[in-house]
Image (cartoon, rainbow, N blue to C red; front, side):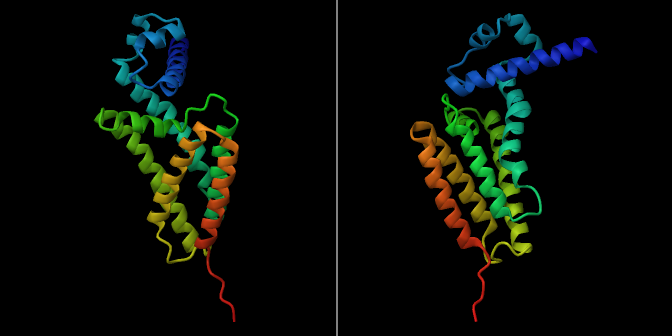
Length: 205
C-alpha cells in the first residue's frame, strides 16, 4: 500500500510539474530532460511511469486538465438556478484568476489546442473531448433555462453555447496580452447585456 501511495504521489508531482512546463514553454519546446531537471529525477524514473512524452502528456490531460476545466467551467453552471446567472458568476470567477496571475500565459486548454492542431491527431482528440463536454453542459444549462422560464424559448441553445465558448477563449487570450482587469470588466459588461437579450420578454398591456 505504501509503495502504491508513493508511486501515485510521484506521478502526481511529475504531472503537475509537466503541465506547468508545457503551459509555460509549449509541448514541443519542453523536452523530457527539461522535466527531469525540474524534478531532479532520472530518465529511468520517468520511463518507469510513462511510455513516452506523448503518453505523459495524455495522462496530464486525463488526470489534471479535465479536472481543471470541469471545476472551473462546468461544475459551477450545474444546478436548477437561472443558468444566465450561473454562467455569469462562473465566467466572472474563472477570469478573475487570470487578473491576479502575473505569469498568465492564457487559457491552458486553448493554448494546447492551438499548438497541437494539425500536428498531433491523438492528442487533439483528447483536447477536443474536453471541448465537447463543456459544450454539452452549456447547451444543457441553456435548455434547462428555457424549460424553467428563465430564457426565451426561441433562443438557439447550441448557438449560445458556441458563442460563449468562443468568446471565453478569445477574452482569455487577450487578457494574457495586456490590461487583464479592464478587459475582464468590459467583457463581463457586454456579456451581461447579451444575456438580457436572452431573457424571457415580459408582455406589457
